[in-house]
Image (cartoon, one colour):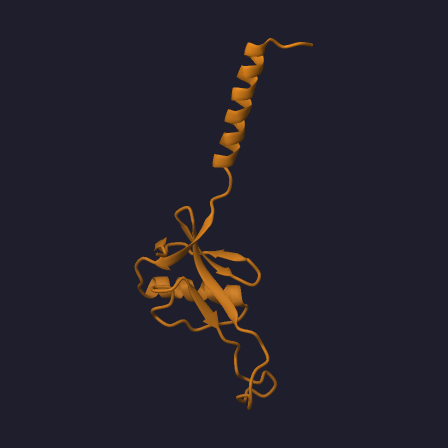
Amino acid sequence: MIFPFGQIAWLAVIAAGLLSACKTTGPTEAKPALIAKTNQAVQDTLTLAVSKAVGSKVTLAPNSFTSSPSVTIEPSSVNKRNGQIIDGRSQEMPTHIDLIMMGSACFVMNRGTGEKYPLKGVSCKPAP
């Protein structure tokens, strides 16, 4: 079947429109972020999400994610068998946690695994 030139041109315009529409409806890109406003509830939400991302209970400084979009969590220095402090150096690697925004939603992300944990009720702003 042969199409006239006018129909081919319209088909090309429609196809280009559909392809560009697909691009604009794709997933939102993750961007580094900072905490916009902090209080005890925000601190508790951050601590819980980072603990989930690391896989163990952590303690965060009150200014975590306020001036830098990432924190480094050092491994615990306690011997798991007897609870005593380990003499010498730990061979475990630290865990890097990033605060990111996807659209207007905030997440903490374990940089090593790529797993994201949502932060409900936490306001973020893009990092400079």
